[in-house]
Amino acid sequence: MTDLDTRKQIARLLLSEGTTPLDLELAPIVEGEGELLADLGIPWPQGLGPTPTPIDPPPNPGDPLPQADVVVITWTVAELNALADVLTPGYPRTRWYRYNRNFEDQYLDKIREGAPARAARRLGSWFPTEIGNQKVICFKSELHLNQDGVKTGDGTATLPVKDLFRQIIEETGASVVLTIGTSGGVKLEHDLGDVVVTRGAKFRLQSEFKNETFAHTAYKSEWTIPTQHFAKAEELMADFADNLVEPAFGPPTKRYPFDGPLLESEPPNTPEIILDDGEDMPEYHPVLTTDFFEFGTSTNNLFEEGSAVEMGDAVLGLLCEELPEPPRWAIVRNLSDPMINGDLPRERRGKLDMQAHWAVWYYEAYGYWTSVMGALATWGIIAGLADEG
Image (cartoon, rainbow, N blue to C red; front, side):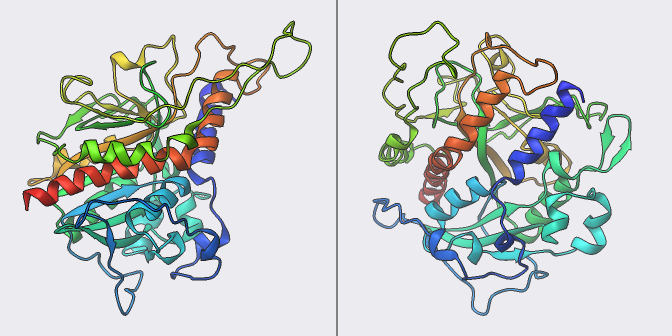
């Protein structure tokens, strides 16, 4: 197995991590929800706190999505848990409505055997909420660029998540679509829990999609993101900064000539929103979408090309290029792993390299809490849209 194949497998494992039998049910389920409920006690500004709006009777999985002003799309269990705790408080992921519209006849043949969407027998799950006057649908996708592709040629494959984006946009009529989730930091100053917000996305494909015409294409959405509630969002994010404390560190065995005490980390990062406004970073500086597990290091200079690394967002840009009247869109990516030390050794005798080891460890340790930061930044954007009416 090549290093690229190993990284592809890591991507697939991380995208499905945390899935339980409860997540495979085709109907919302209350059983076991107690351990999933987290009351974060967020002190929302008056009139702008998220208000979940459950539907009675609950919609069927095959029903179309209702109309909405904003759709927020996320990907993994850790991201979903955080999004539910922040934007649909009191309604954990087990209570979200399942969604399998057109799954059997329009999607199934495009999804590889063994993909999570086949096990779940659906496209995703969702729940409605309101922020001010904005009707919002929060959506967790079971489709991913890195999970589903059926090979169609050398370096080409099916991309059903693109069809899902189109279906969501057509059914909801949303004027704004935000994709949110974890990502790898690419700049030393961008730290654990910071949130990149950008109107740009770029493919950086080197595996199953490497020969697609869009393999290195960049996209942008030309609109002004409202920022008047970002300061409040950062204030709320700071309340959870203690969950970003990095542990004391030392060599893994006593064979290293190290006699000192464990190295203590610096105080936890105070998370910030990093906007593509020409000040924090260049306008439309894109998130990089890869088809394998890639991350920023101190030696690969990925910041010159993009603002963070993830595995799916540029598909939204690709679709919107094809739509006659596309929605405004933006990418909200919390940094679940900071820039990794590029001096650490890579692969040795086919084993997992130390750089990838630490990138995976950071995601597994901090995926949820950094995703809380991303959900709070997302609230900041939607609250700004509410001001616009």
